[in-house]
Length: 281
Image (cartoon, rainbow, N blue to C red; front, side, top):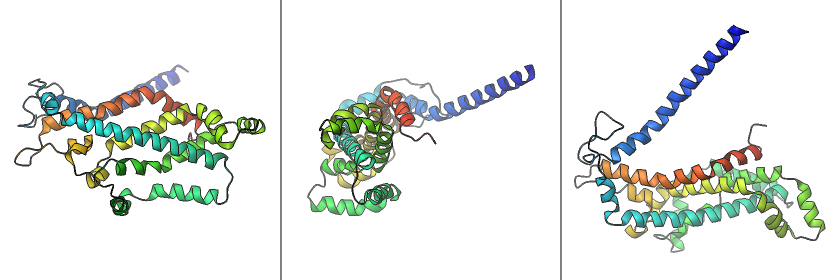
């Protein structure tokens, strides 16, 4: 018995050390990015060898980033797009998820399969048709093409459907007996119970919108409409070389909203995964 406990402790220590090493490997690039953003001469020469403590600590790069107000403008653009994208994405996902979970209409399984099939289509194959469509509507170089595609979120619909599947059917039947319409049942009975999955969908939609680069790069040409990823890609010197200090300072600022949102809502993500039927059961 003693030898077994000793071996078990040894295995636990090895696993803990392995996870610690893995965690350090994952977080090191972010710490290096933060270090370089505070390095005074990073725009001139890349700090080598990489170090976590800046040799010439300075707020110079952050002052340059905020100097002309373009980062603030990019933040407002990204925030506007992200908020409306989250509202449309979460609302549509909950409505569609409820319909596929509780609804009864012809072709429901086929339509659900078609929605899931869109997850297998790479975005690059849809880029030109989407550009052509929004261009025909006269929406290019505006925020509309950045927001409207978020209405169809196959992963969100899948997660919402699984979540609604786990809720008691008796709630719906009782409300229907009392004369409530289907939409009233959805709004007043089921939506108040969707806090965890709503938070999860909101985080995923916010992250997807905030980090989007390729699609905004195609449809946005005006400097005043640039989002944070587009603004981040614009730092280069006269010779075309990347200004590393400014880039790292902007990158640090760009990840803060996602980091704060995730830290605030992470408990809801864990709970929604536990209740959505995606545990491998």
